Length: 638
Image 1: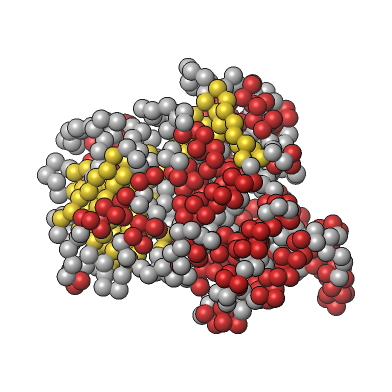
Image 2 (image 1 turned 90 degrees about the vertical axis):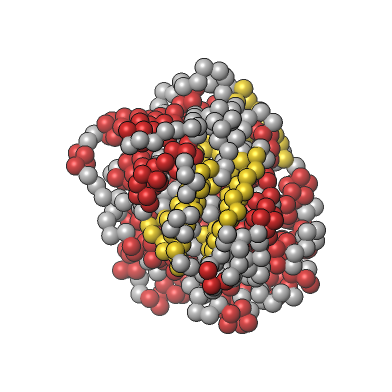
């Protein structure tokens, strides 16, 4: 894993690449690659690279050139099948100078051009500059495990980097809030499409390539996951489990490719526990496992991780994070993320990454199974609510439904019945927009309507629908069940935000994280499985649970989805109320004029009285920290 950056000035700009600017872009990402550094500067083009040495430690330096130096590459990631591709390339006459996957990518591009991207199995973001054709080719892996951001200027110049802060370092844009992204962020934890919270900065979407020629950018989608059922629909459950398990174990095996020490994050959930079980069969030495928790009982799952560590005799390490450490680290981690932290668990991930970095340089992690195997409770709830909602609407007139809904809203704020009914079919129309997108939003539409000031709504410029991209994706999948369409939408949106958390928090500690559940061959097979193999009644991740029967402890197999509980709501009501006062209620925060001060104060008061608004306060708090660090350029973030 590394950090890459580059500038290609257009001919019309009359500018030439400046090595000092490229070096600043590169070095602001030093945490991504503290081992080595490199630059390519020629005419109006320049590339930068920071290296975290994982494979081919001696000869894998970048930028890397082909034989006649007409092609130059900078690359971040791992292509796990690179050794399998070499014999084919050698038959075409290529001679390899290194054992690195970087050279395999370069040779494959030399042989097949942009079509080479379809041969790679792994996680990657790379850029190749062709000095003969004056053409830049950028590619990002199928699921978006590795990040890539860019700015395409009005004069046709292009700036790109692994992290947004490198683009700011180059002066590619002036840091300003992209209001078109605001409603998306407030509803969905993060942005769903190519826009970021920085005006003018876009991210290359997963499974896409970017080609720059004569100042013009062409974006092409080269991969997508489909949910078409195949001729194996008649297979028995046992056969589906066996085939899925084979692909899963193959994915884990591939991700053990490393010339440096390797371990894994172990939460005690079924996902990471399954990876630990698979790894235990494949390595000769004890697996190094790493877990994180908090002192609060409700936010401490370390006993489950210990149970799995004991089962597989791992070399287990733990860290317990205090709330003081948590809030002290938060501003720095917003800087690392480039955008507000979507989830408090990002902070925990950073601390376990720091722990792991003392022992290893690569970790495997369980991210990604929930979106492919229907692991979130909201899937079964939505399906049930839609069925009941249609029945309910058929039996009860609209006026009666509205009367009942208003009665629910009149219940006391602390009422558990009120909270449950507001999440049920009773209070909303039975549509996917209301029952799924809006029902599980951080700030649903109605709350945003009152939260945003008139000035903010005016600046949205017609971009007020927080679910526009999600709705487009949901409707674009013409095949598959209703569950499949929800999984597809989340894979394209919610998962992307989780992967950015995974990448940037681990890279903040200078370690590489790998995600076996997101091998594209495993994802394709899982998508084509019958829905009964993913969600069966109230049993989530059915195929995974069956595959691990007899291997994992029963207590792990039967556990429901916990996420990673972080007691920020409790902290906000207690001794860390001052954090809310500073970043949510302070004059500095409210003076931005984005949010209605009265509504913000009411929200805080309702939380302090006992109604749970921890996700909403977290979103507002992080947005303010982000403003101070990037828009105000206040390094103190206070």
